[in-house]
Image 1 (cartoon, rainbow, N blue to C red):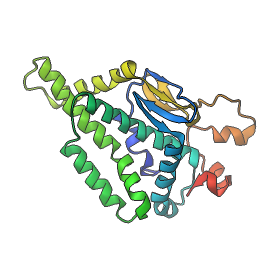
Image 2: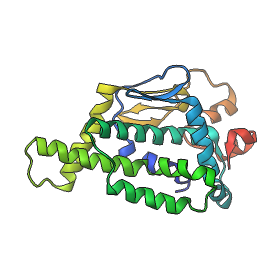
Image 3: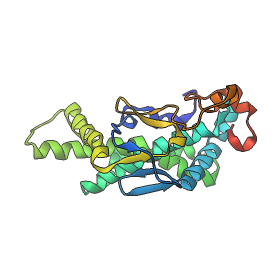
Length: 226
């Protein structure tokens, strides 16, 4: 994809989970998924490692992104992963072969990346494989409990997705507004959730929901990736 692999898993249908319980996290907390809290420091560190992992690809593609955009994608993937693991725990499940295959593929892609960033890259970019795996396992359990015999693949997937979509209402997902993510028609979507008023074109560019390469190139090195 043109914006790098960072957003691949985050923009799939499984990343578009119903987040009707989405709100604002506590100070110092970037994301709260049920009982699990992910700190701002954890998100910043993961985003930095993702930037390092994708550095060579960025250079080849002459891509420069604001670090705010990288952090946003990182939060999406971390949230998806955390919710999938929480639901797996609710049902007493462990990630299966579908997830393991996804991890193996991401490890192959990460082989040429800086060693210190590989684990984070693999963990986050395999978030969609994890969610898919858990969705299908949960769907099979739900349909079996309902007495449905020989369900189709589509029925299994839909039953699992329904569980994912209901989960936030019962357990809560809270995201710090600084990351520009909120539920729009039930989908975790990049939007301007900044609580302050942007002043001038530079500030507006900083709050954009799509990466502005020219704006990114104008930022200090510590505020951009690529």
